[in-house]
View 1 (cartoon, rainbow, N blue to C red):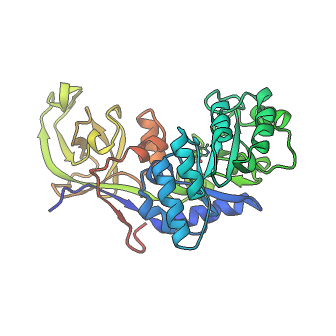
View 2: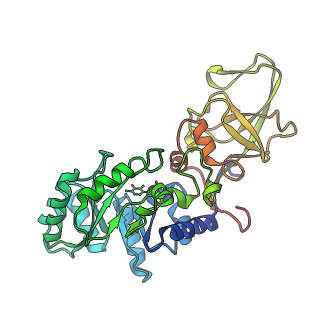
View 3: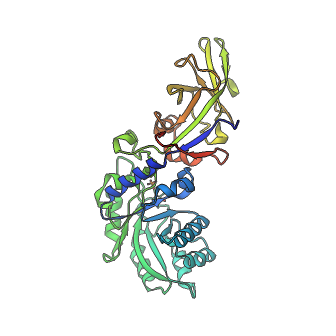
Length: 364
Ligand SMILES: *Cc1c(COP(=O)(O)O)cnc(C)c1O
């Protein structure tokens, strides 16, 4: 029997979430953001569910090239956008030949394009730094950079793009959008502004190409707003089982360093899932978990391959009992909040050693 830990991916949920993104996008076209192996859901499972997307967005050059090749050979020909652009001239050459679209966020990348010779012209997304101070041209340098791109023989078209620092925060996008609008210039060029949070909250960003990621996988970008309230369906369930049960006497300690001490005699279940599987080690005692569908909590430190759970709410649970770390009736956002992180990180961290399978029909 294999180790009883599996990530179960509900492809129908991904398709439904994409349909919702598309309805929200109105006339805008939708890049499905599938970087980081479809946010941990695995590209091979996510892609069929994203058949209705207008394009695919990733960060990894090899993945972009592979996707562009499969889009070409299947005759679908949807664009693939490389979100951090080319890292070196060899990437640019490979991407141009494969028809991959490139984000251009720096003068270095503009120069790389200008110096390239005998390449098919590339479609580029020029990125403005609208306040995040991560990637992008400073606002005052944006329009001149776009001018340079439009003059370059290696550039087929330019879309004006930004990425919001606080689209999922109370402060929202007003300030960043004002910076973008004030400096983008080039009103004749298409725009690409929205991630999931912006798409869901602000109609002004539903233009050109939108770039939802998180919402496709059924998690809410907004703290305190459940995914279900947004009409989203969670696409990942992380399932395991109890592989042992311990009767711990009052005063007994649980796990490495004994950070949890049983205040009374307790039945403690040991689930096969640890930080080497992607479960966050910093999840404290009290992080929610389901045993046989009943909500309970983790106890003590998360180990590399295991974690301990309180069986008080499920006294009949024995070795073999079903454990759900997140998904199903336990929103991933709640686990993330308890662990001091966000759903994005939990999804993306599911380790390569965790087998992933598609949910059977009706299982989601
Ligand atoms: C990851 C990413 C997105 C998708 O963001 P979500 O918050 O997951 O919707 C969109 N645009 C860029 C530039 C990104 O890097």
